[in-house]
Amino acid sequence: MAAMFKLIARFTKNGQPLTGPGYLVRFLDRDLVKDDLLGESPLGSDGEAGAVCAGASALSLDSPGERRPDVYCVLYLHDTMVYRGETTRNVDFDAPRGPAAQAATTIDLGTFDIA
Image (cartoon, rainbow, N blue to C red; front, side):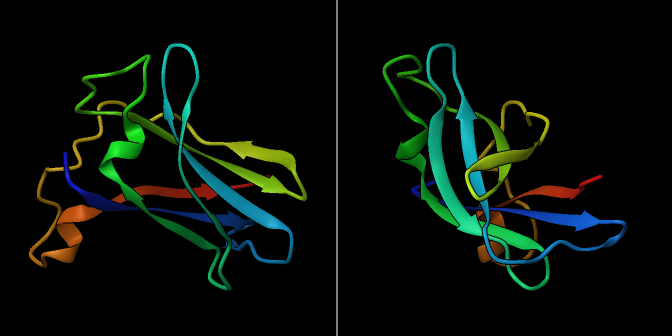
């Protein structure tokens, strides 16, 4: 598992970037007992959130040998959950993702349109 990786997600509303104070995105690893917090970030002016995480943050007592975590993100507005993304299963943090070295450690969870 990569020592460090970056998770990113974008949020839109009616096709426009979702922005504003109070939005927070949490990136999590789904586990059997308790999901692991991988990182969190406010939304940028382009509706994007990103967090740099340590590969070890996906390891926990209920998943001691996990090599490919199940990752999802949750959008909050002032501590109230607004949206929960679908889980991306068996994310391979070591898989190449593009020609640039930095791209190899970036996991793009996609763009989510909030109704």
